[in-house]
Image (cartoon, rainbow, N blue to C red; front, side, top):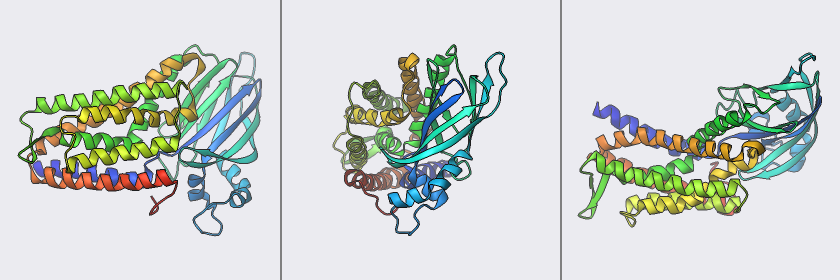
Length: 385
């Protein structure tokens, strides 16, 4: 039984940095639509790195995409994207339902926090004036199960949002906002859970602070904590401080009261992971890890707000949707803690935990975060990460 616990915890902690090295930013696209009668206008922002992986846009194979290469593949990009999006109507009374014919116009390039995106201008017409739109979204479904489409759609006076793809490839968006507010709350809560689980830098920061929670520093070394209750109190302090801090800055940023440069925020998040991991090797925050969780949590909140910047908050339910996203992030964190704390408490006295996981794992996390810091500070990419 003990061996199984060791193996489970080792695999969990080691796979996080490995996965993070290749996918520390989840794959998203941003689909913005506006319906005027039967006419649909909008745009679709799709990451060039994802399109290059599927379509091979780098014609000369030099590892760098140029505007000329992207422009030369305009037709392929449009055909691929539109073949993976179907929109149909649920008609208003007295009208028939049917498909909406969507076409792609000009191709542009835009810069998001995680790189360059192809921007397809969309235009089309539905068979009938809809009371609702039904969307089927399959972009990258055969190559990336984690990919999601973040939808923002204006139907008359109603602005609604939804998350497309994954286990919900089909969704229906109502034209009237009768149930839109609570639907938006649940959608944003789901997005919050999804974002914390896919945000490996946030997870590694939290885990770095939690690794010593089942230990105490005595006689110049880590020793096992005396009781589960003491470890639980320490974890509660850390998680509460982190939650409170990131909720403050997430709300400030999402409500557009203050914005920081995304490159600065992402670099600061990487630095926070380094500090938290190094503290496990050379303790300098002993009883102040909750203070570090609060201080750096303020920075992480601006990072969480990045996903909302592309999706936006629905005008009629801004605060409710923001509360849903915050709740989702918190539920995602609690799920991690619920799995992490019992396992680490059982293993806290072993050489495996104190050496292999605490020291070895923290060193690996600090090294990975150092790569992120260089990438984000210098706007470059190292070792294919």
